[in-house]
Length: 425
Image (cartoon, rainbow, N blue to C red; front, side):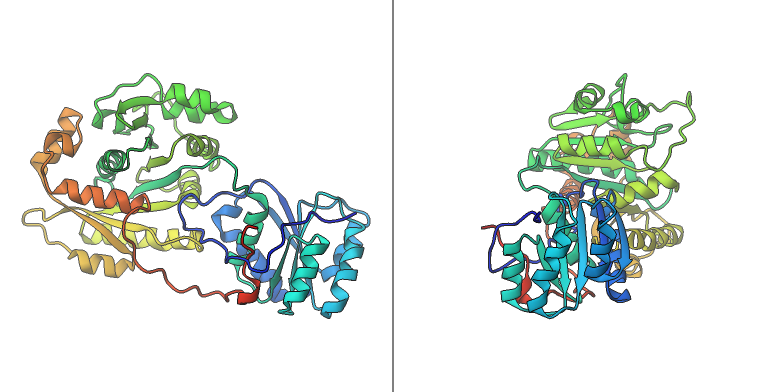
C-alpha cells in the first residue's frame, strides 16, 4: 500500500502569501501531526491562525514515525499526516514503508526532517511522499504545503472579498464602500456585488435608488439552502457591473446571528462574482469577528478625530491578531477638513495606527448630500470632481490592482533554497 505520489522536479517554489488576491480556503480535511519535539508541534499549531485553515481539523501528537505507525495499526488514517523524523537519511525510506503499511491508499504524507539533502528529497518523492519540509519551518510553509496538495489549480476561480469597516458610527463607511464599488466596476469592467450586512439600517438600496423585494436577509435565513441559483434570484441589478444584496432596512425581525451564519452565503458569492464588497456595520459580535477573518482585504474608514483614532486603533490591533498571516488593514480618512473642527493630520493618524493610508476624502457636504438624496454615486453627480480620482485609487488598491507598500520581512524562518516547493512539471 503506497502513498499518493506527486510529479517529480528538482525545485519547488516558496509558499504563496496568504494575503495574495484570491487566496483559497483549504477544504474540510483532517490533519494529524506526529512530532518528536514540542517546538515542531508549536510551529504546526501556529498554522491554524491562517484563515485558509479555517475548515481544517488539525491535531498534534507525540512520537514521530513510531507513534504514527502505532496509532494507525488500530485507527483509521486522516486525509493528511505530518510526521517528524530525526532518523539518518538512509533509514527514513524504510521507516516510511512501515507507515505506509498501516495507512489508507488515499492518505497523503508530508515528512518533516532535519536533514537538508536533495537526494533524500528525491527518494522520498519517488516513494510516494507528498512533500518533504526541512525543519525549522514556519506556519506559512506548512499552510502552503497543505494548500498545494488539496487546492486544485484547475478549480473554479474565486472572487476577491473586500470589507469596509467603520471606526465609528457616522464615519461614512457605507458611502465610501458603495462609491468604491462603483469605481472599481467601471475601472476594471468586472462584476461587483455589494453585500449590505447592516440588515436593520443598511443604505445600499437607498444609495443606488433601489428597492429590491429580496436581498441579503433572504440569503442568510436560507442557511444551507442557498446556492448559485438562489443567489442570482436574490441579487438586484443596480447598474452596469453593479449587483446588490441589499439589506431589508426593516425591524420586523431581530437580527441575531451565530458566527457562522454568513459563511455559506460568502462562499457562494465568492464562487460567482469576481469582486465581493461587504458593507460591514459598526458593531462587534461573533459573526462580524468571524467574517473579518475570511476577507482578502479590510478597509477601515474613519474621520480624523480622537474618538475615531481610538476605535480604529482597537480595530487594527484586533484585525492583526485575528489575521496574523494576512496583510494589515487599509485606512481611508473621510470628511477631512470639516470647518472649525480640530483634526488630527492624516499623516499622524496613519502613523499612530501603523497602517497604509490609501485615500483622503475631503468634507464636501453639498456633493455627498446631493448624491445621497438622489440615490446616485459621486461620479454621476459630478463626473469631473477630483474626489473621483481618489475613489478610483482606493478601489484599485483594495482590489489588489494598485500600488502597494513593500511587504514586511517575515519573522518566520525561510525554507532552505534547495527545498523550495517544486515547480509544476
